[in-house]
Image 1 (cartoon, rainbow, N blue to C red):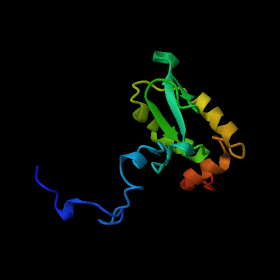
Image 2: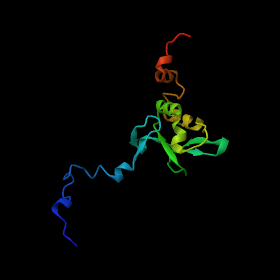
Image 3: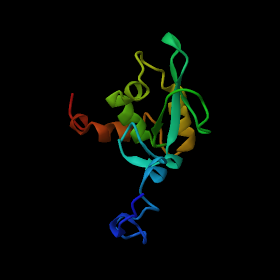
Image 4: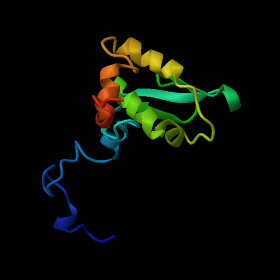
Amino acid sequence: MRPKREADRITVPDARGVDFRMAGPARAAFLRTCVGCRKRAPASELIRFVAAGSGVDLRLQPDPGRRLPGRGAHLHPDPACFALAERRRAFGRALRLTGVADTGLLAEHIRTVMPHGTTDDVAMVAASRPSKVGRPR
């Protein structure tokens, strides 16, 4: 076996400009992407949800304990992210669903987690559609 060259050895964590305590697969495993705003955040800051049921009875079920079986997706506990995900139809893509899922359970869970806002708030709808605000009919 050939002896290792000095360039192959990493003696100090910052030897090559990378802090190995912060980078790599161990840290990346805890980051998830919100299906609403598409921003990455630690899994502890996001709500995991799964699709429960089948066919016509398909619904999105929150999984705060992160233990339910099946493919899961993550969402910020923010009504704005929920509304954005609904508008973009991101729930079906994230969970690889063919049908349309009922979002009632997930919306109710977000309302209980974030009591100061609701998913059908008028201000949120006005902010997401500025061209429709203040326009006479």
